[in-house]
Image 1 (cartoon, rainbow, N blue to C red):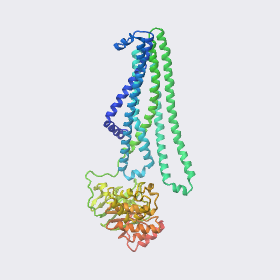
Image 2: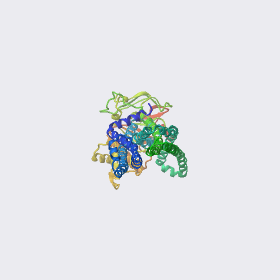
Image 3: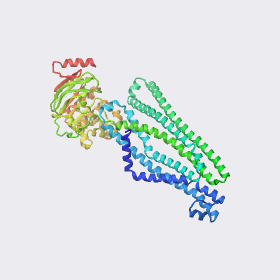
Image 4: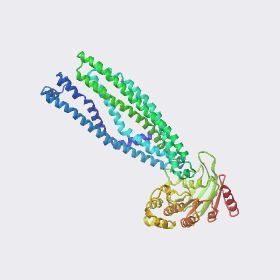
Length: 585
C-alpha cells in the first residue's frame, strides 16, 4: 500500500494523542457552528425588529424577546454578533493550539523514526544515496507533512463542514434560491481537482531539485579548501545559480497555479453572489422571501468564498505533502541488507582468531573484488594487507565489521560464522583507526569517549596519555572541553589521528583495524602517532592496511592482494611488493 509506513507512524502517534485530537475536533465543530450562526442575528434584526415580520422559528425565548421591548431586542441581537465572534475566536484558538501540538509531535516522531531507520540501513544504501537528499527528506519533507496530518486536515474538514452546513441551511430556507447558488459549485470542484493534479506534478519535480541542491551544497562546502585552492569559486557559483534557477521556476509555477485557482474560486463565487442577489431580490419583490433571508443567503455565499479559497490553498499543501510522504516512505520501506538472524548470539569473551574460508565479494553484482580467498589470523597476531588501490584491502575490513556480508564463503571469528553473532555485540570487540580520522563537532572529551560512552574522566585522560594527545589537549584554551570544528577541522592531521587512537584505546577491543593510519603525517607527528599505535596494538589481533613497507615489516604476516586473490608475502617477495606499491603510487 502506498505510503503505508508513513501512515502507520502518523496514525499511531494520533492514537496516542487522541485526547488532543478530540479537543481539536470539538473546537472545529464549534467554529463551524459559529460560522453558520454568524448571519442570523442580522437576519432577525432586519426581518423581525425593523420590518416587524412574524418569526417562523419555534424558539420560545426568541418569541418572548422579539415580542417585548424592541430596543432590548436590538441590543441583545446585536450583542449576539459579538458573542458569536468571540466564541468563533476561542474555538479557532483551541483548534490551532491543539493541532499545532499534534503536528509538531508528528514531525518529531517521523524524524526520530527516519534517523533511527537510517542508522540500521546497510552501508551499501548510504553509498548509493546522497546525504544531502536524505537531509532534505528528514527536514523539509517532514515539515510538509506536519501541518497536513493535523492542522490542515482539521481545517479542511472544518471548511467542508461549513460549506455543507451553509448549503443545508440555504436549502431549508429556500430550495429554489439554493439551486441557483449550487450551480457554480461543480465548476469550482472541477477547477480544484485540476489544480491538485498539476501541483502534485510540480511539487514532485521541486522536491527532487531541492534534494539535488542540498546534496551539491553539502558536498561543495565540505570541499571548500579544494574549490578555493583550484580557484573554482566562480565556476561553482555559476553551477549553483543554474540549478537554483530551475528550482525557482518550479516554485514560481506552483505559486502561479495556486494563485490561478484562488482567483478562479473568487470569480466563480462572485458570480454566485450576483445570482443570489438578483434572484433573491426577485423573490422578495414577489413576497416569496423576506429581505433578511436574502441577507443570510448573500452572507453564506460570500463567506463560502473564504473556505473555498482556503480549500484551494489546502489542496496545494496536500499535493506537496503527498509527494513528501512518498519520499519519506522510500526511506522507511528500504530494508537493511545486513540483518541479525533471530537466534543470533551475543559475542562474548572474544579471543580475536579470524578465518576467511573461500570468501568472495562483489559490489552491486559488479566485478568480483575478492575471489575465493582464504587465510587465517591467529589471536593476538599482527597482519598487514598490501596491494594497489581497489585491490580489496578495505573490503576485507568491512566484511570483518559486517558492514557487508560475503557473496560467497564464510568468515569465522573464534570458529563461529560472523553471521551468527549480533552485529552490535560483534562490533563492540572491534576498534578502528582510519586514514582520514573522522571526528565530530563536539568537545575533545566527547570525541574520545565516543569509543565507550560510559568511560570516566580518568579513563579518558589515560587514553589520551597513551595516545600522546594529553599534552596538546591541555595546551588548548579549554583543554578536554575544547569544541573542535566539524570533522576536526580546527586540529592538525597528527592531532586528529592521536585523538582517533585515544578513541580506539578507550574501547579496549580485542580486534584492531588500522587503515593507513600514518598517511599524510609529517615526521614529528608520525613519530608520536607511531608510538601511540604501539601502545594501542599491544596484545590485540591487528589488521593493518598500509602502503608503508616499513610499517609492514613490523607485523607477523603480510598478505598481498592482487586481482581479487590473496597470497602470503614472504621475505623474498616483500621487496617486489614495495616496488609495485611505488609504481601504483
